[in-house]
Image (cartoon, helix red, strand yellow):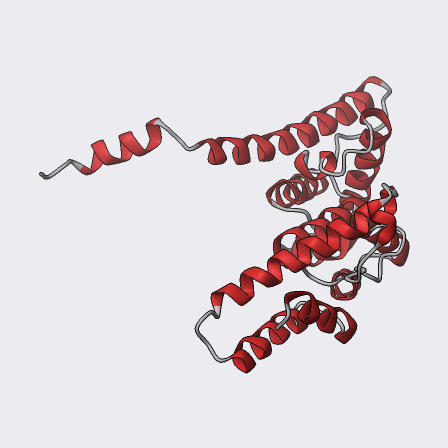
Length: 248
């Protein structure tokens, strides 16, 4: 049965999905935060006779950066590159990003250490970006700590922020996933329990990869699992331990 195009559009627009509403809300929060902050600055300047209103390019640049951050986390380096591509002046870019970082720092002090707060409100923090990035790459893709570190360096994140993020994601002994048996975990040692959980996460993911190749020759299954682990940056010690754990 033929349906008028206008009715299709009206139906589609009438009930947006929950994810779309939630995503739109996150972007609106970030933009509202920046607009309110800009209005406050401009009002303060007028009240105290501090000169002309805020530079419109600066306001637009800061709003553009906030929109990018509300869409997804960015490092300072990534933001700078994208804003440069949009034609903003270098000094204006540095000023805008620095202000967003300052706001992120203030919000972290007043609202606690929620690593997602600055990201969702259109503010910039390399430290929070690194923490979110490290956790997501491990949880979603099982990237090795070494590969996560390399990617964060490539994106321009400083060494201190990277170290903090790696400890948040992998614990103090962040370069090892401890695939071997850990007796301390059985005794309730919290650090050991954390290591065991990381081990089990990787073993479970590897097991799913092996399941995808059922019916293939053993050597083919082994080779594909090794390649899967290598692409994620895992060293041979970890790979051999996984092979032993899965008896493949």
